[in-house]
Image 1 (cartoon, one colour):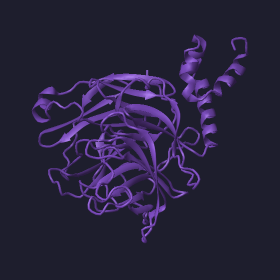
Image 2: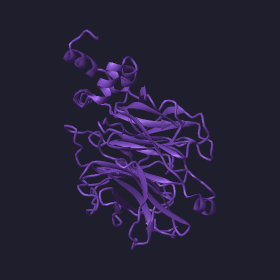
Image 3: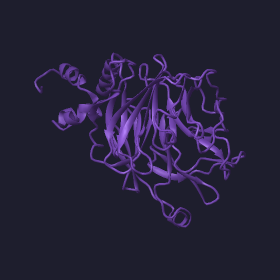
Image 4: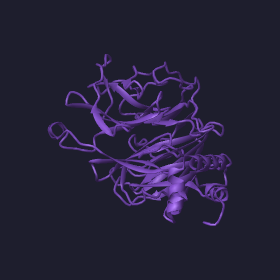
Length: 405
């Protein structure tokens, strides 16, 4: 290879899958420098990868199971002779030896919360490497109000739309006991307290609520503070203005005991630019176990009035299909949809009462369950669980050229 002309060498290396770049970089210094530091080559490689992915019908997803992060291929072909919906694609160099408690995705970057290390965060770009971020905790308030629990923080990952400057939001929103919002700036490599204006609607984001990044901003479910029977809604944190939006409506009436999960409609990019996406929400009533999936109209601005498609994307009564009493777990379940094929896949644990044994995939086809009780639901074991009740996660994998160093 070292005797090849530079353009031929680049052409060969551009055909290497992104998941094999770690092996390429460890081969010799020349290839390491070429793949890491040459922006023209990196852009050429990324475009070649995107062109190859455009020919594939199964999107790539990043999954977290048994505290390990892996890359899998998601099959939403809606074929009767195919049972598998996920197939292992590759282990991700740099994450295959780290136990991860939470993952958050934003346009190609993954924010990973380690399981045991409570004083560092890991931001990982599968293409260009990783970056450890040190952070501290307010132990005086944590010890008094939250029994010293260091895993009660919620996180958001996004960027300033005017400068593409990435930021991390870390917070505990637990009035009146402990409310703290801090933001990390990638450019300055520092944390600062975020002094937010008063929230006139008196809402808060519950402990353990999981956000979703979309077009550089992050969305969470919220409800009226100190009211356990309050109706839930959405709020959006704008990383450009570093403020929260007013409450955004949902297309149904939901309460804190119901299952609410966020997803997005697409992970594709055109020419390296990400088009405005649609927010997708799964709602399951705690009383009836009826499940609905709704899709928003295109979101152009984070604080703009949100509207939803007038027709539900998918509905199903899964009371007798999964379990007659239990609904999907709000803190562990995640889902994907294919609008064209009208297919939804929900990933969750199959066990309750603290004895999770398997990660399951539930595949809903063509609208879920018919009125006469006939089922269009399939079930598949994705992976056996080695740990008692560890949460699983999954999100789309989107390559990015964002530099972390």
